[in-house]
Length: 182
Image (tube, rainbow, N blue to C red; front, side):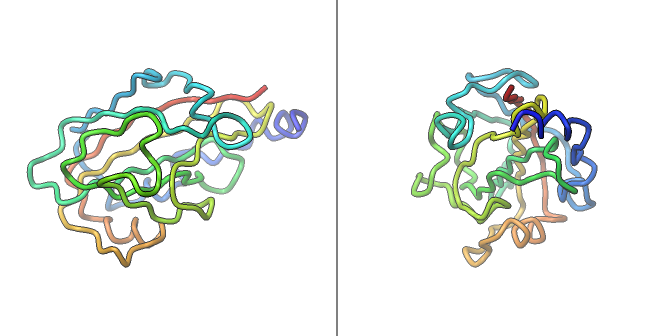
């Protein structure tokens, strides 16, 4: 397994190929996202790593700086270092505008004020890091978008959600964590 990772080490999607790099997601970076589990750019704990690698427990997150006219928040966690043609969306969630963070393990179906849409991995809920062993450190970006309109419950996939919010982003925030398997 680690051999395959080493062979693919130079193959990475890159942020510029992801759906969030398109027009329609530009907005002031006014939202500050923090975690007590890792610093921006730092290593995420094993407890936050995905099934079969760690405990798949979402890290604690806090944010501030959402504009008062925010009608919905959208949280997207992506892996820009996956050896695929574009970044992989691990987790996509719609949050009530009054939510100002989640505790460790709080990104789970049934959590108050959070609704998940189907991400690239075909599931709804938190999906932690599971990079290929030997591929090197992967960057996992926690994007938070403040949206100027409510998002209908009929929006159930990440593709539909991103199309819905494009052009409606009031502000955004970003926290990056890394994870590596030897």
